[in-house]
Amino acid sequence: MNKLHNMRLEVMQFLEKSLDSFVDNYLLPVEKMWQPSDLLPNSESENFMEEVKELREIAKDLPYDFWVVLVGDTITEEALPTYESWLMDVDGVRQKGQEGENGWAKWIRQWTGEENRHGDLLNKYLYLSGRVNMREVEITTQHLINDGFDPGTDRDPYKNFVFTSFQELATYVSHMRVSKLAKQYGDKKLAKLCNMIAGDEMRHHLAYSEFVNRIFQVDPSEMMLSFQYMMKQKITMPANLIRESGDAIGTAFEKFSESAQRIGVYTALDYVDILQKLIDKWEIEKVTNLSDEAEKARDYLIKLPARMTRLAERMVTPAEEKLFKWVQPALVV
Image (cartoon, rainbow, N blue to C red; front, side, top):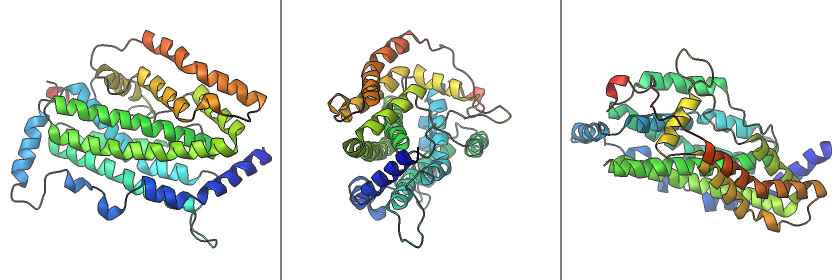
């Protein structure tokens, strides 16, 4: 175990030498990126109240499951402190100390800065919409942060980067689908803001998946085994412990997932599609210099999408909407 741990630290130190270029290529300068206030009614404008009224009028026509998914996505984004603290604990990452700036810590802080805008933007939209019980949303968010987050990666950077590669692409899919639905329902402003968030998620996905790609080049067998490990245990969604006020940990996640599947925002088939995209991106079939164990892991991974597709196609999502404290029953349209 110590040998494997030391090898991972060496690889992280090797990758750290390129992190400045990753920051330049995949993250944006603060002054040049969008901020939540760019996409919301301007509170300094004389037309602020008119803009809010227009936002609320359009919001009335958005269906119940759509609001559930939008609220769930917002809460997931708002639990950012948990994700940052988890990544800061990965082997090879350390805060600035006597040895100077750690490249990984710099990356995570700047990634966090970009992600932080997502929750701010969505939260303000929900507040202005008048369709959501914000106190219940805030309680759920605090619970999600309090209850913690365990993606099953421990402090292993290889497993963590498989998770982030997968999860950033999943959040891209979710926000992009919400954007398209909002446009169909006539809410062009909401469509735009969700599209902007999706753009960030795709950039972040490209970065984390490139970390994995580079690890495959220097430590292929262990990277392959880590990929297999994560897919065997399945990728845990960040909101899997979500709950409403007075309820037990995780009790709201299934209802939230059903809403997302009913309106086609994120489905079991999307999970399989993301897995296949990662297999293709990392060119799993072409990886060389694998141990016998890693070869078996590769075979498992290549066959996995077909097996999971068969399971996903047999899944049945309940047709009836489940009510949440986040969105009051009286507001169902």
